[in-house]
Image (cartoon, rainbow, N blue to C red; front, side, top):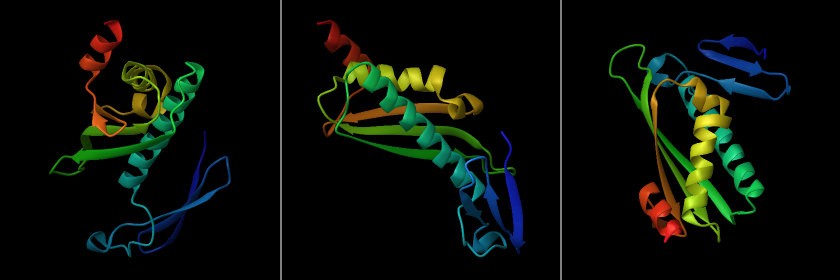
Length: 148
C-alpha cells in the first residue's frame, strides 16, 4: 500500500491513500503546528479503532450474533521520553444487543490476534474490556457463564 503526504506549510500535511480520500494532519500549537488536523499518533489510534471495529462486527455477523450498537474507546499510553511512543493501549468495546458476552469476547480476541492488521502491526500491549448492555463483563466470567 502506498500513501502520499504533501506538506502544507508549518507542520501541516495532507495525505491520500489508494482510496483517494484526503486527510489533514498537523501538530498541535504546543508543538509548532496550528492544530488544524489530526495528529499522527491520534491517527494511529483511529486506525486501530476502525480495524478492530470492522473485524469485530464482521466476526459477530458470521457467528450470527449481531449487535444493535457497538462503540470503541481506546486510550493509548505514551512514554514520557521521546519518541513518546505508545507503550500500551486500553481498548473498551461498548455493545448493545442480544449477542452473549462470550461471543463478543471471542470476536474481540479473534480480531486482535488474527484479523486486525493494525493491532498486529503494533508492539504495545492491547488491554481489552467489554461493556455489554451497560454492564462490564470480564472474559473469564463470559466464558464460565456460557459453559454453565
